[in-house]
Image 1 (cartoon, one colour):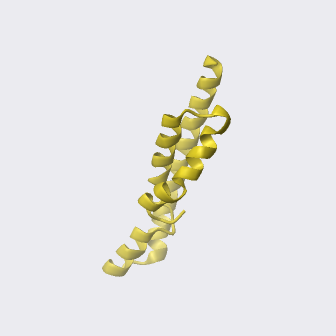
Image 2 (cartoon, rainbow, N blue to C red):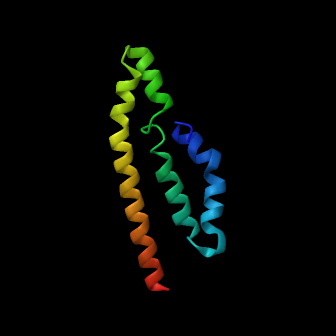
Length: 95
């Protein structure tokens, strides 16, 4: 949300983790791991703080960097969503 992995995990991590654990939907460890893994997408998905700093330092176009970050970020989000969906389905089957 902010473009920084640490601030994404720390800022909204507690709220998101509590929501995932509400009504025993997800175990504490899985909720924490998912929050940490999703925070990694922050610096890649535009707009991100590291991309803007890199553009300023290297005189690279911010727009080009943003376009370069969209595909990897969407791929990471898609793979994470599929993995969570599979794990949720497996955990429902084992209940």
